[in-house]
Image (cartoon, rainbow, N blue to C red; front, top):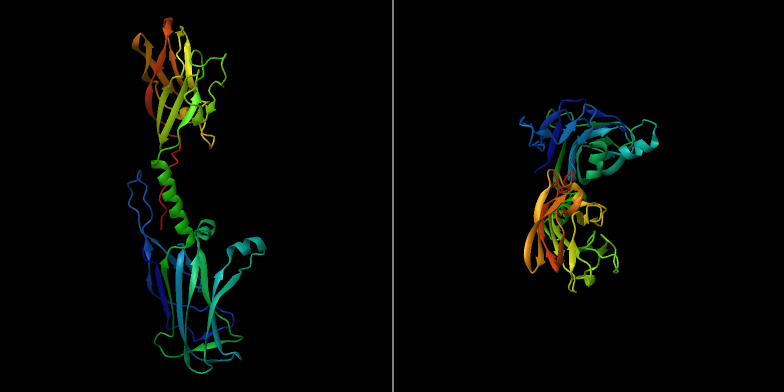
Length: 343
């Protein structure tokens, strides 16, 4: 995307008062940028201006970038004792907010001087407009001032006697930082997490007579456990994979006619405090829990926003092992996948 702005001065009065802004009445070129469209709104969007010129000589900049600002003035003579000096200034909106007086505060960026007699004054400088400025104030503002101690007279010839040119030369540090963060967030979204292991919640998967915390997270060097069943989970983006880890020692368990939780939604907590199982929406999802009792027999295991559990309708003894695997897509109410930076 190219950012550019150019105006010139021809027919205006030749005098520029001390500390007055230089006016450029003639528009030559000014770039436009197409705004981001709303996928849900079919209304065509129109390009928006990157700059706006005001009648008092102020130029508003609406895009963050690094700019080169170049200007030239064909001066004649004047009443100033220090020659003809022109200064590019940038309006400090932050300082004005702190000052609170309502007065405009302009900060010098660069200056250029001409000889005492007829000679052109041509200068260029770098102008930095950050994304923070655009977000906070919606724009940055600049203007070219007569920095001499008295009125300066421009050449009286009807041809262009003054001009200003602004063009962007690339992103600023904030844009690069935003892009880096986006790529990093995107990488984290598509890459796999570490394996998280949790002790199962209810008996017989958890034995209160043995060491451990029901539903508690354990380190990888504590899996498999000698006595407790565990739930393993790994994810990439919003796709979560759960599986049941049997203990090392042989078991001989009894499944009763009750609801038994393998893992409650409040047990599965990420490092940032989020609880992905609580994001589950809609009807219950059924998976398969394979129960070893001589051979493996399937019983339904359920997943919803309360956790992972099963409702058993009979009593079964001599259960020596149990296994299941299940993949769930769990999306938070407001998806956290970042949008690419614009500009």
